Length: 430
Image (cartoon, rainbow, N blue to C red):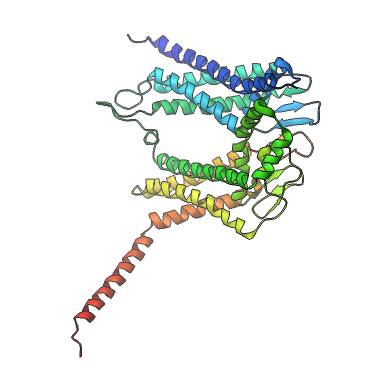
């Protein structure tokens, strides 16, 4: 049975809208359930069930990158600090929902190419998904308004549009991937991209994954070194069993954010923890930190030892791997295609890394913690130097006749030495 043209147009819209509703429900549950668990498991909880739900809505807003306005309490003013671990969960949830829906649309024909009308149907589904997701997020933010906490609706809508759009597009692209089967060819994502973007995307993926691994490893090592301080902060909070589980989830959600702060320092830049503070590879002045055990990984005040500057080689190695990947992927193509791939790679890495660092910045109130996170002005030049330097070295080694000539010269010298040795061995002794 085949669908009529009207069904082909209406079905993606309905399916995208349903997927958007499910994704919002999952995102809300991820934020509300821990808040309810903390409230119900606490002997001294004074929020009540409704207060816990509203607290979960606030976490939903911050998790999408929205802002809250606090009008009462110890903190006054705007709060805007995205727990990027929670944001990643929301993007993944949206991607899984759209992947499932996109596979039902059969966007890829048996030949391995996109079927006729695939882009139209996918676009309609993505549009419906984003509209429903953003509308539901706005409704939830409106419900979460209290005399003390006021979600900023414009930031909620904009942030939810970005999160849902990224997740939806990722889900659609993910659905296109297919393993080979008898009579049906395999479908991979990178070959679907036009040249030279396919080579650039490969290098960008390697570089970003490498930088992410370096940043997370830095936080884990710092936590290991500062475990005693982190344990002391945990004991001072004394959250109990259920509260401890919720506090652990909060810290896991914040860990990617703090990892990006560490990446800024590893790239040669600086990040701040409020007014008058600065942390870099050369020195640290973290100021008075909130009682969050994860912040026990922060270095103490003072000048860092000289060997810490060798940590610059960690992101350089990650960027070198990405540069080598793009140069290898573009090797053998025309010069115009190769230079296009190199330029797209360099620009893509610079923009995406700076965007990620910007997303990790935020504020808690209008006073001492009015700015948290990387100072982008201190990162741009060292990052650009690392990207261009590693790319130039990769081109010189992997896609330049100079290395071949050097190797040829070395081989020629080696042959002459071997011939001289053979002639010397063949000369009769006196």
